[in-house]
Image (cartoon, rainbow, N blue to C red; front, side, top):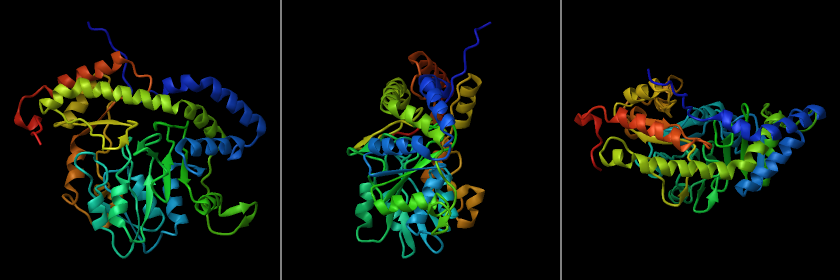
Length: 387
């Protein structure tokens, strides 16, 4: 009987916790003794440190990444009657935040090579009601925002970055928060910089935007019991800030480890790509990728995924259903075939385990099982044609 092998997680949060456990325990004790659980000194310190890390003037910690996008929209006065252009190849929260703000999501397809927003299609969908475009920095790399700006030249349309998957990524030397009027990010536990629960942030160089985000996220208040505008409750708590500060000190090194592992995948999987059995991810020119996810394309994706799962390898799919085909957004009126690139991707994309601390032996096991799974058939429908 063969020896049972330990399962391989998609991301090893237990390993991350072990690296920061002592600092987190000390920080938690400090917050507990202070009695300041919402915002407070730890949250303020994290905001300063993350703003410095990103090279922006302001970071406002909030409750989660979805709130961060909604707050960005609200402080730019984008709501009922406005349209917001965004890619359909994204997590549903991007469109959800637009709808929650009262605006209308206008979806566009993605680039077939990088899977990021197609700037040309986005520009074509900009109309008289369009108030913003949200380029999503997907899977760990920054969208081609400079191309978007060139196409939007002279039009009164704000650019809001959805940077939930790109903490530490750069494009042309510029990181998240330095491309749009405002950026939103998420610190959901599995992110490159993850909390021990939900948390998020809004990034901006604009003093007034930062001030208003902080006010709207605090019940529309800057002074206790004085509520100058309608807001809601979305604040970073001190315990999550402790975790984020400890992990932020390691983020650059952890991202570098992700890049090393991505290069190992590139090399190990190149023969499969050359044989047309899968397609490797593409990094856009000028980008320094942080590999939040390592996503390949395979035929018979669900069958391949089943083989990986049976072998104890927790591969995933990000995302199996594009936004326009989700029931919640049926009211937008898009049907199957509306966005062919995203729909094709949704049937083929496969996220492989990749996380800081992953050993070469574990990664080699993923490659071994994946190679056997995609090479199981030799029929034409298993292979990609040469492009």
